[in-house]
Every structure is written in structure tokens, then in C-alpha cells.
Length: 137
Image (tube, rainbow, N blue to C red; front, side):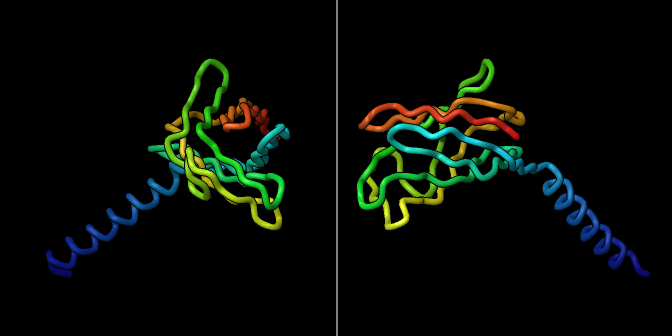
């Protein structure tokens, strides 16, 4: 085997090693419960703990054929408070319409955090503030 082939094989090996390390760093936790709220309910499906952010996957549940708006989401756990950076599925500070089933899948990005055992997600809407208590089963 010549030197060029050895360098090529070494380079590919390093790329596979880097990919394995990056995949190993991401942790997806399932088995979370959320309590119902008065104006808008968030059902958490899973939380993905990444090296650069924490992403909450879930769905918003509301009354079909009505409108709602989310202005802010804050997650309080133990002694830390995290404000949501981004949300997909709806937009912050924009009205949206509930469809026939009253369910909207969403992804909420928070700053990087440790594994959450329990917390309170505070959802601010024009109709009031809702709190959803999160607990890990």
C-alpha cells in the first residue's frame, strides 16, 4: 500500500470517528408528562439534549377552529430559567389557527442544559399565562 492510499484511509477513518463522537453526544429523552393548562396545552414527546442546544419536541393542543398566539416560552427547572430561542410549527408573537383536530406539532429550541427531571414551562399568550408542569416518568 502506498503512502497516498494510507493517507486517504486515515482521513476517512478520522471522519468516521468524528461522526461517531457527534452522534454519541446527542441524547434524546422520552417519557415526559405535561399537565394541562387553561389556554394552551403543550404535550412533550421528547427532549433532545445536544452539544449546542436543547430541543423540545411536542404538540400544542387547543380548541379546533379558534385562534391563538404564543408570545414567549420560559422553562424553569431547579434554580435555572431558560428562555426559548426559536419555535417551529408556529411563530412567536403571530396568531395561528387551530385545525380540525386541534393539534399542532412543534419544536422548541432552548439553550444547552443538563437532563431535565422536572420543571415548569411557562407559556405567555395574549389570553393569559399558562404553566405546564413537566415530569420525567
